[in-house]
Image (cartoon, rainbow, N blue to C red; front, side, top):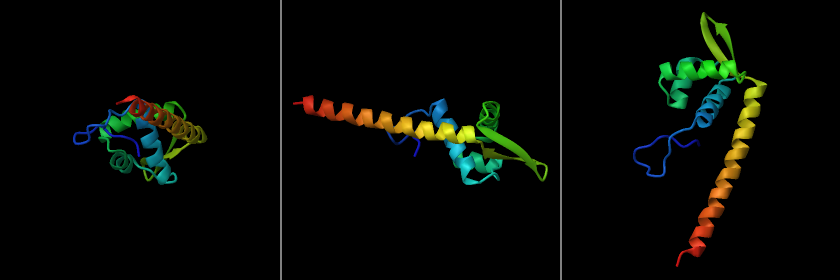
Length: 111
């Protein structure tokens, strides 16, 4: 799961733009073309007004597509959006692996 800005967890960190993009894309992907802004808002843990700006950015980057259904926009992930997610998760895996190595190395050096 993507780390959230957090109160109780001292290891929590502020979500970066790429984390937010990935979160929104994963939520949209779950709805197979039927994602509405409110559902995405709940799934991503973001207020609708802030999410609208992010969705516009994802649309302009070609990571999402929008279609009107019953007079309201629905969203779906594009092939480019899926490519972004695949790359994002691969990079997260690399970074987490490097973090584990650095942590293990620092533990070995500690008395």
